[in-house]
Length: 194
Image (cartoon, rainbow, N blue to C red; front, side):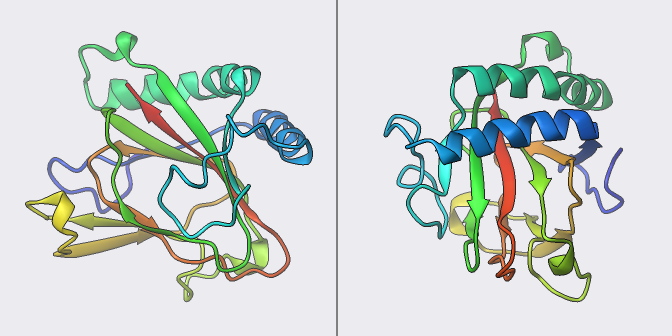
């Protein structure tokens, strides 16, 4: 389903996964986090954001396989909606977990070396989901002529719910305000599509 503030060439798509698939992915993520993370999976230093070391990590091979399987129907719906002629050749090339504890955030950024990006929200603190607050919302910047300049001519926000997926062009600048919850981490999986 499209978000109601879509503009011209900015196509941002909203979808949802099943509760069972969400639980399966969350179990995998928690299992990876509870193990001593192999440095090859650690991503905090490679990615943008205000995260503590160990709070961002790439999915392992098996986790990525599960993630691709769960996300495939969402990708098919997205590419059908945008009438993408090469939809069958598009696939998730990388995925990483963001475990945002209190005050963790993602500054304005866009993704490189891919065509599309997205984020799946696995767990949100229900007490932090408040339309009046900025906490946990994803923001998109529109109408910029030079994405690297970070000059914002229009910003739209969206308050995600658990199990929701947002897919967008990789060049679309986006950011997330700090997690204000002191109770639960906000857990999401970000991904890039070739």
